[in-house]
Image (tube, rainbow, N blue to C red; front, side):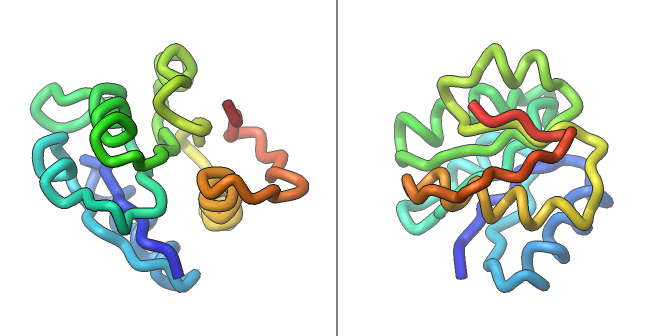
Length: 134
């Protein structure tokens, strides 16, 4: 079981992601809609952060990913409709899952991202049209 930090301001999307992760046996911290609350909740035991780019109150997930990486050493997977912006900030994440995405592929992408964040070879990484690995 892995601990996943979920940062998504669309409550319907966040609930779907949380349900899928929990059904797959992962523990979910969140969902959070703002950078400050996600940073406050983040701790060393977090295995992966799933981070949207456009967040509530004008917060930017790219800023959060940088802070999580630099402050806590937490790897991020961007989950966003802003793929170009995510790729521009690839130094702070291991990849991007572009919205909208198929729910049935979501958990396999998260599992691959968890393995990649731990330096474990996950062969092959899922070849899903909505995923770009950095």
